[in-house]
Image (cartoon, rainbow, N blue to C red; front, side):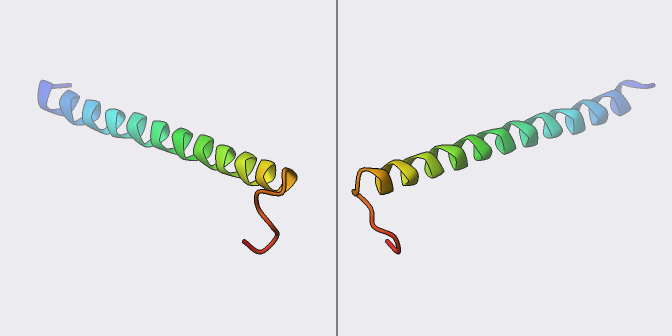
Amino acid sequence: MDIAVQRRYGAVFGAFGESEERSRRAAELSRQIAASARDGLGNVALEPGD
């Protein structure tokens, strides 16, 4: 495989890695938001419907 093709493959694999990291971070933030909402409801800082 010549260097140009290797670079294209490298760029695509790099983009996949970035996408996976962003997905992982979005999932973690979603989990944190849900936990904060649950805590807020539990300590009455939030009311249902807020």
